Image (tube, rainbow, N blue to C red; front, side, top):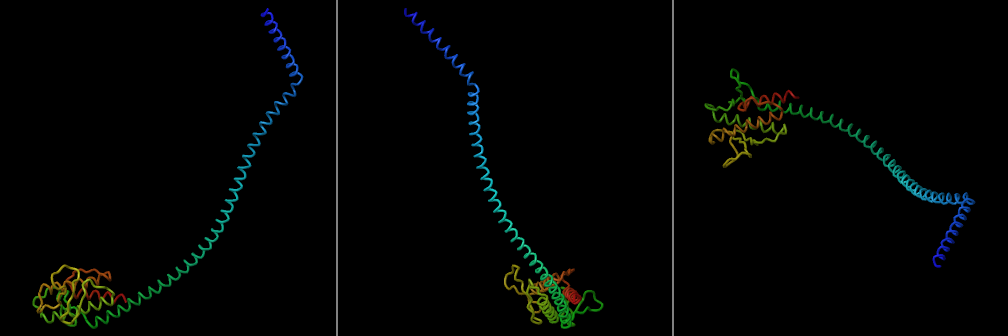
Length: 268
């Protein structure tokens, strides 16, 4: 009995399902175009939402690009103004440089004129000094010279009158002192002319006792006298080097001085 009811219920359910399927099929067949339009509308709505989102994104990017363009345009205008200012300053600098170069050329020309005048004055002074302290070659003797008529040997002083020797060295010391002054050369070994009792100082070497050395032999320690003459010859060498003259032999006191004087006179 129960089985019959269950079977009958199943059959009724099957019948209803069949009817529903038939009704749905009939509805779909009769309304297929509308359903397709509905599905398409849903798809179009989704696509339209996507396009709206993309458009919003593009509008935001466009706005950012426009803002960036305006910012760059402002910077470009500012840069143009700065470049114009820089060009003006450059032009002013070029003009100032041209003026400075012209002024420099004028000063160089004036300097050359002053240098020539200095050379001429030094030449004249050397001529006057040679007249005051004439250095003459002794006839018949090689590299033998006298100053104001008094012979001054080259380093070897044996057999020479000590008074005359001190006088000749005093004349030489005074001449060296005057030349250093007029040539603008600060001597490493300062000379202190005092006639036949002139002396010279060595402020750099290590010596015990006095740093001054006599330029006269009588009454002085001989090795100190010899060292004083050596320092005098070194001072003459310094003067010659200042004029780009080569010293062949340091011991040739008067020949080296004569060479210096002749060179200075020819420069005028």
